[in-house]
Length: 357
Image (cartoon, rainbow, N blue to C red; front, side, top):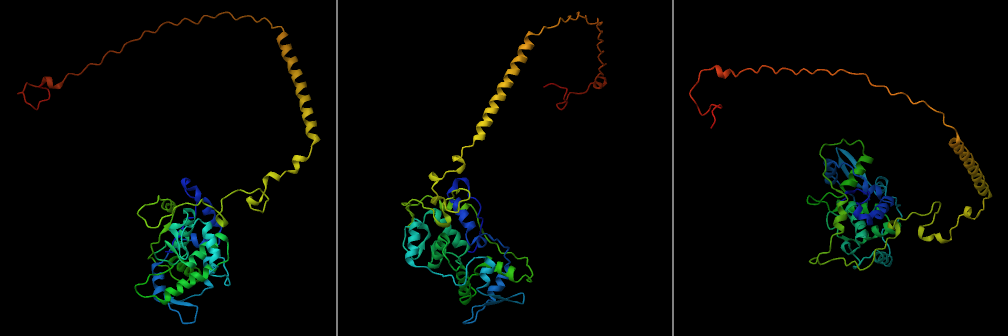
């Protein structure tokens, strides 16, 4: 599918996935998850129609607008910014993977990994990986061995060669390409062409690609249905760990995780230091307040005992006499008579509005 994903804060009623969003934004693959390039339909079609490979040669050759296009395994990490190295492994021991899957509340067999049998919290991570990183056109409900390695490595922070997995999928698609086969990795191919071949002329034809948004949370939290053969029983509690552990603010200046810090034994040195200057300041403030209170009391007593001078009351002044003003009522205007009265009588008619019915 190879779609992009909006890694923003989840809605308020899906606060459980907030730590998952933080983990996706701080892992090694955020650029590959979030980058949403405008996919040129002509570029995509010409690349896959002209793509070839030589036996024993790890280079994919193609032609777009009469320009030669070369894609090697080294180009993938340079453009997609996977943050891996060429010597990183592409597989891990089965026992290690099974332990991590059991910790992720997975209740199914392995391999392969059935996404529906994972806890919704970890199912969201597997879903994002399948629709954004994998080269599957459909069938994203099952994770292959490599896909499971990629998800587990992302959680535990293990070294994993994501670039080789993507390049191998592109190479396998070139070897089996025919007219009925689909064009794999449209978004990644577009990112490589824009970065390495900027001389290509942009075209008007745009490929309509989808973007995964917050609606996926409602799909993951659907109630179990009785008529589905594979359902998640949710018998084990959710355990967040690794790069997707619960978000807890650690003490400032501490480089250790919050779970390794014993807050009960942490004491501040300032709490054990007795500062004598504080007592001096308190005594000085109390003395000043006492002096101010005495001064205010003396001022109030003097104001009460002071003689009030006799003030002659002003004589009453009668207001001037004002003659009433006669109001002259306006004469009503002459009402003009109805001009219809001067007309000779006419024969009554039903349409005449003056005739009462």
